[in-house]
Image (cartoon, rainbow, N blue to C red; front, side, top):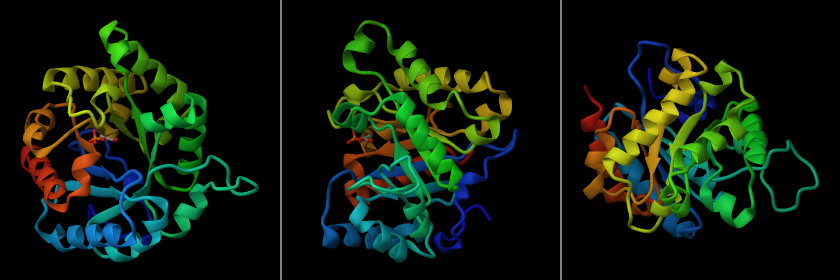
Length: 277
Ligand code: PEP
């Protein structure tokens, strides 16, 4: 069965496809620092209620803020919706005031965790080395890292975008074995497109996703076939069709549009339709 129940406490993501299997499609919602308890639980409930009519070929993930994770896991239990965190600390436990460890996330049934989001890099100074340490800690607990990479506006304008993404991938993911890498999900998020209303064209997205795939290929065809590469950056129902139809785009990491149940469900529906072949 493709979708395991959340309360199995086994990350479904940790079972990568073998070569030859069709690539997985994932639509994940990054709620960022939005919603209060009533807003977050209301959104989870609305998504769970509508989940039965979502296409079954798409893995659906939501990432509420820390205070709402446990309640979201409980409310999503038994549905197809999986719950992710937006960040974690790289250490197991200890005197790190204000931080949350992967083992804590694991203990409440969280299955995935976004790492290296550009907002973490920009506002909290996260380096590729630190992000790599977080990926390692998550993998050790069987939590799927959703690793974000992407260039800033000036880096694209100067033509350095492929180099930037290559360095981010090598800097954070270079140390992992093929088996470990196969358990990672990558999100390409051009920084200039996040929350700006500017979206990469479908050609720009495909070109970068193909580049990421070729980097994965250096670890072998099995790794390249196992790792879904999501697009993120002002992805909405009115532009998702072009993006999701690209062969190396395996779904999306969605910010603003994930805060609305109808828009998010529409995005899942578009991904399901386009990737059903
Ligand atoms: C994000 O922050 O991960 C994101 C993709 O945001 P938005 O869709 O709002 O651009």
